[in-house]
Every structure is written in C-alpha cells, then in structure tokens.
Image 1: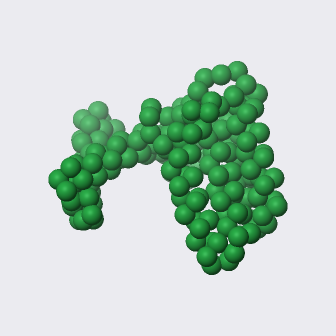
Image 2 (image 1 turned 60 degrees about the vertical axis):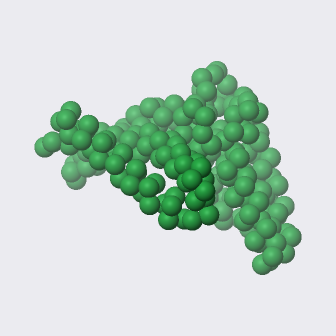
Image 3 (image 1 turned 120 degrees about the vertical axis):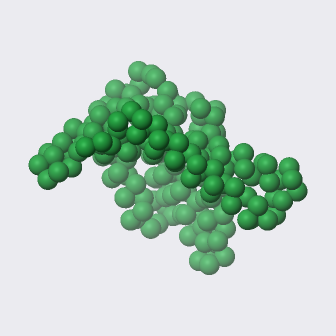
Length: 204
C-alpha cells in the first residue's frame, strides 16, 4: 500500500520484534510514547531517537519503508520545530523535532512487525471481560478495523480531490477542495453502512 500513513505497512519477517507478543509490543510502545512526551529535555530526545532507530533496526525495516512512512511526519516535525525555535529557542526546537521523529519511528516499528488482525484479536481478548457490562468485544474490534481500513481510502480521496481542484485552477480556494472532499467522504460512509446492513451487521 503506497500511502504515507502507518496503516497497512506490515512486513512479514522473523526478527525479534516480529516474534514478540502483541501485548508486549503495544505496551512497550505506550510506555515509550508516554516517556517521550513526559521528559522534556533535548539530551533525552537524542536517547529516545536512538532507541527508536534501534527498534527499526531490530525489526529489519527497510529504508524505503521508513522514508515512505515518515515523509508526512517529518514535514510536520520540521514545521513544529521551526515554530518552537521562534517561540522558545533552538534547544526546544531540536527536542520537538527529535521527539516527533522518535514517536513516528517507534510506531512504524510496531506497525511493520505486527499484523492488524493480530492487534484486533488481542483487543478482543483484552476487553472480553467487559461483556458482563454489555460491551461486545467483536463489535468494538470490527469498528476499529473499519476505521483502520477507512484511513487509506480517506487519504486517497483527499489527494484525488486536491489534484482535481488544482487541475481546474482552484488549488488556492479551500472551499473548492473541502466541499467535494466532505461530500465524497460522507458518500463513502453511506456506502459502507449500506454494505454492512445488507450483510446483517449491526442487527440485534
């Protein structure tokens, strides 16, 4: 799948990161992410970046994959760093830039070594005890799965609509882009809902 999001980037393999349980990877990603957000220091940001790069190396993630999936995040990180440089100085700018890149690399390492279905299956197991209070784990997992599958399609619609607006010479007018984009997203949502209803999904 050729889009810059962290969706559908799974690469089969036998690395240590591939073999780790899903819970361990998601838990480790959560702890690392919280630590990166909580620790505000440029020197620590360098350490976090080294850890994220090490994860990518352990997972044997290719440079092409890293370049493709980090392009958008890197652009946002550069912009955020520039704003921080203007507001708080170079140290804060470097910290912000490195932290955002570290978060992206860590997320890519987990996404590239963990199938989405494995994540959803684990989620069902983890929230199964909530059946007692009326929560349907399968329905929750299906909702998350639909959201994950919808992201690439939504991005594709956004790019197509933007290119169409530019082709008509309307690239500088937000309404020429946003209005048809919203209409197309809503239409896609209705199509998905109709398809699920036709299969009896959601019926009590």
